[in-house]
Each structure stands twice: as structure tokens, then as C-alpha cells.
Length: 179
Image (tube, rainbow, N blue to C red; front, side):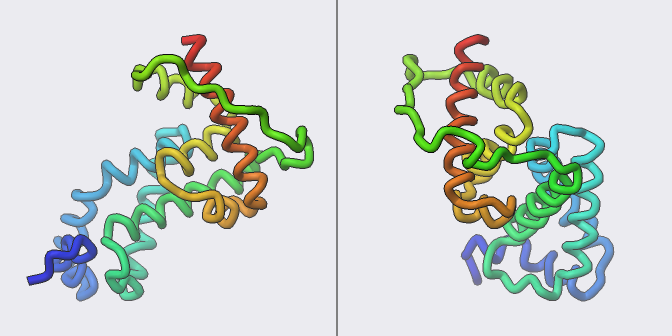
């Protein structure tokens, strides 16, 4: 018996590959809420997140033959949702400010004085960030992408990703202190 996390829901995935609609619905039911949360964090729009999640599931089920357990089904699906969300944001042409438009150095980061920061304040602060900053914060801090991955998916340089992240984090700290 396989205990590797990559094989979570293997039975359902294999049934889906054979065209069983009930297995597709079951996989959908297991993952729809988590995928919606990812889409909503990325897009900040209920309607856009719902659309992206539906498109992602359709895409996943159409291309299920290419899923070969290199990762778990959930991780594979999450990547689809994130990529579709990023493409949606690119289509809206939300600008990411290039590094060349700003100073070439980063100031020393300040640490928040308290050990515990209210998670509600952090969420509220993220919501108040400009969309480009919010996108970088979500990808780096919440989704766990590194700067090389962010630079690939956003089609920006790694240094731009890093500088945008540092500016976004600085702005987030300011917003949290205001709250």
C-alpha cells in the first residue's frame, strides 16, 4: 500500500482518468473550497475566483492523463489555479512596477516590535495593499513561491520580484501599524 502523499486520492484520480463523472464530482467536492480560497486571495474578486476555479477544474479534468503523481493532485490543481489567476491578472494588465523606476537600494528592514501580530490585522493590511504588492505578497508568503518562480510566472526579473516583495512587506508593516 502506497503511503506517499503524492498518491492521496489515487483511486479517485484513476477513476476520473477512465471518465467516471461521480469520481470527478467527488474530487471537485474535496478541493473546490481550497481552490476558491487561493483564487480569491489572488484575484480579490468573488466572481473572478469562481470563474477561475471552474476553468481550472475543467482544464484539470481535460488534461488528467498528463497527471503522473510527481506531486499530489491537490498541489497539481493548485498550480493550475495560481497560473490561471496570474494569467487573468495579466489580462487585466495590472502593472508590476519595474525596479528601474525606483531607487536601486533597499533600506534596512524594520522588525515589528510585538512578537504576536493579530492575524486579522495582517489580512486587513494585505487587502489594503496596492494590487501589484498584494500579488507578490500572496505568491511569496502565502503560496510559498520563491523569487525565481515568481519572476517566471509574472514575466519579470528576479531582482524586480525581490524589490517588489521588500517594498510590499515594508508597506504591509506600515499598514498593520496603522490598524
